[in-house]
Image 1 (cartoon, helix red, strand yellow):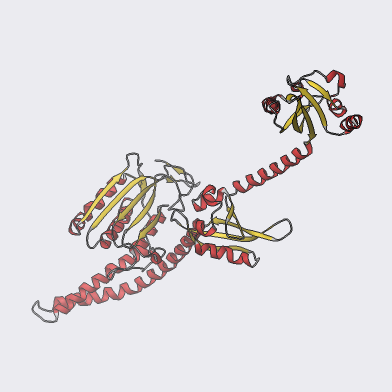
Image 2: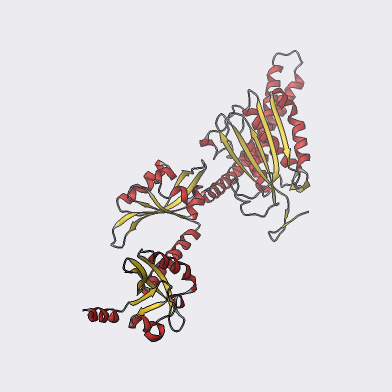
Length: 492
């Protein structure tokens, strides 16, 4: 029966060997000798470590030591074939016990190269797919049947201001909000796909953005739906650009209309004023009707001033741009509004960063821009408050502006005009730059429209953020360089 066992060991395809406590080979089967290209006699007495890849020495030494202490161990090691090429083997080591003492170890090594190669291919494929997903600028999120996020790429983290570590394992509602989750998960429950949809979204950081998204069912290898794939992109910039184009078209159309109306009204007004002044000259001062003529002249003058505003809006004067210090422009503005600030019990402060460069602007037009913004702030603080103006080089983060996004540093300065007034309702933020929009009883609704057109003519920009009851901040970009005919910029 002993011979049968010996023949069985010799005929197996696994590598079978026995080593003593010193790690020397006591026995090996034919497959062991064949793999190393040596005779069984020559292999007897060789060190086990002569056949192991040096990188696996420590693990093998530790496993052998524990086996010689009476414990069975299994490990994966690379054995060096006769040509020096390493092959992966799964080796099980069992102690040899005689008279109650461990005198050596028996090892059985099975070739696992195909399994290792397959695992490596799977790992490489997974890493390849993961690198593609993580390099996508668009956000991509997968969700299981329970609405729990199972994957979350870098694009999603950037758009939603939430890391993958924070998102994976959480519900979609917890990361993107209950309303958004209802939109994203409802169609997937019916197994439908939605493509090229848009919706507003509030990030976990409290930022309002607009996303374009596509929803696709996630299928397993049997074609059964196992979840949902949500891909999305922040299109806030695109939406703002669309709004800018619409606003510019509206401004152009209303400019032509305002110019025509103003021209048609101006001539009759001039005639009315001339006749009223002529009658004033004919009537003695004590005549009762003279008071009515005085009122007519005052109202005509008021209308004439309104028409001038219309003309400024309809046919703005091209800016005469030169290099100016923003400090000089601000000084002129505060000289004009100082009395109103004192009368309105408004504290004010102005900070200009030392490294702020000069700006390439029309002095008077930019003065008008800042003056209008400050007057609006004063009007919003009827019970007093605080006005703060901050000027610094634009940092180029693109969070508030469109034209300056990705522009080089130093090309613009940013002026922030903040007040603690009544604020602007969210529904009005998109329309405050439209002509004739106003919430003031005596306003014309052209002040911010003129500001907008002046800045557009300067290749600048304006944005606004506001909270009702807390205040408003207008941010203005002004160029520091002159644009050449080739579209490049040159600092004067």
